[in-house]
Length: 142
Image (cartoon, rainbow, N blue to C red; front, side, top):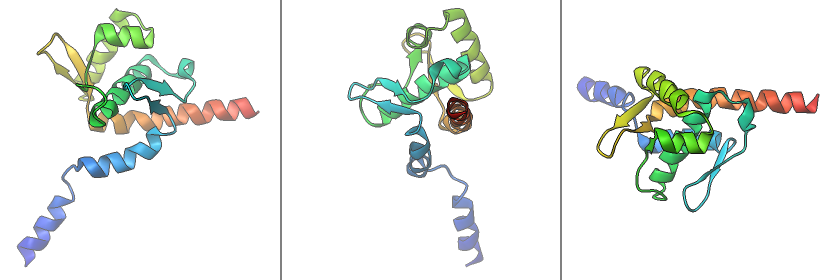
């Protein structure tokens, strides 16, 4: 009986995609919408975001679109992120390297180097972007 209890407790530490999505989707609904083709539409003042936050938002939208079966893969190349964000390729590459080194994104080298966000990477930056949105809304009201 004690072993079964311990195993039940240990199971609480395991990552569960359904639990993750049920926790993160309400927060993401305040920041983005994704159309039927998997393209993101942002509900936050894009110009107020850091380059890293912009990249993370695009990778997150791609992750969600992939989970919803709207796109074939969860990853994007540096060139795609450059076009989507308007950030220079060298800067996109530098931010992705930082995010990779921090364990927030992973590389897929099967079709050239492409990057996808790790689920825990989504959780970490969403709070920051929500704070940016709240601060810009407060400033707009005052």
